Length: 167
Image (tube, rainbow, N blue to C red; front, top):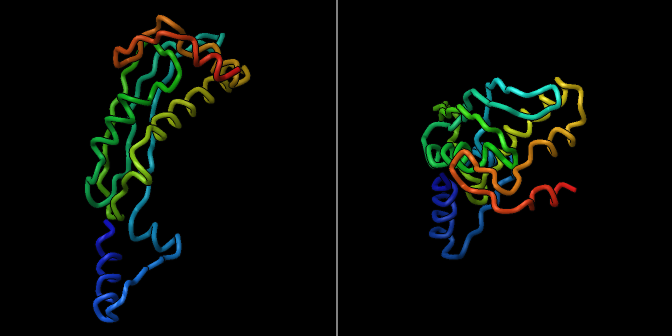
């Protein structure tokens, strides 16, 4: 993905017989190298009138770009490692799709992280809060993992640290 820029710098260095640093304006850099994968999350979320989440079903679509790059790994990380965020939702049925486009490939920006997955569940929690007419902070607090809860990947939560982080 950075090969064209590296080739230009290497050619200039070979011609000048000196080290060359090639710096692109941010917009040109992002246009040529891609960026984080845009996501679309289509979902139905179940919740009680008190804002307690009961289920999430749906699909997330990531615009991967021309090549896969790390797309499948990233989608697995979004779904398996992050989509629940700090929220205990007892029932999950969410699938993910990497969508090939005619744009530059998208990849990790500074390393793989779970940001897209967290943003997806946060948007869903905001929607629930609006639907039940409760403050989003209250809906978040009512749904945080507590000691003894189990994540969709089977991890046992052994502390109440998440509640302390929110307070």
